[in-house]
Length: 96
Image 1 (cartoon, helix red, strand yellow):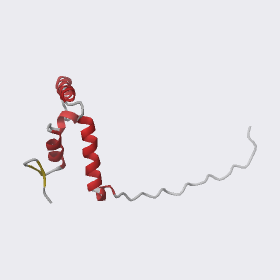
Image 2 (image 1 turned 90 degrees about the vertical axis):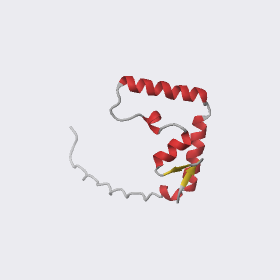
Image 3 (image 1 turned 180 degrees about the vertical axis):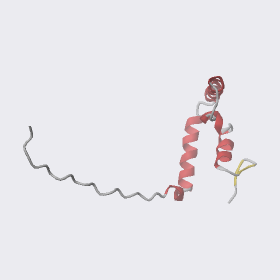
Image 4 (image 1 turned 120 degrees about the vertical axis):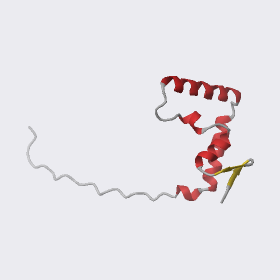
């Protein structure tokens, strides 16, 4: 199944997020090994985008809800069983 955002095809989840957001995912999440200066510049750019688009967080939440609703099979989780708790044997004796 192919997914398109506008006229662009989203091949990976990262592509989908970038096309839906209109910005690279790295802008919001950062990259491994970035310097403090690069991080500050990235955060400044993100703040500018949020200032221009104050509805962006709400739009992202709506987008996530749609993805979850349309792909519920991705969230089929099988609960792991917990091992039975071992009971310690009762101590016989008098506490000092």
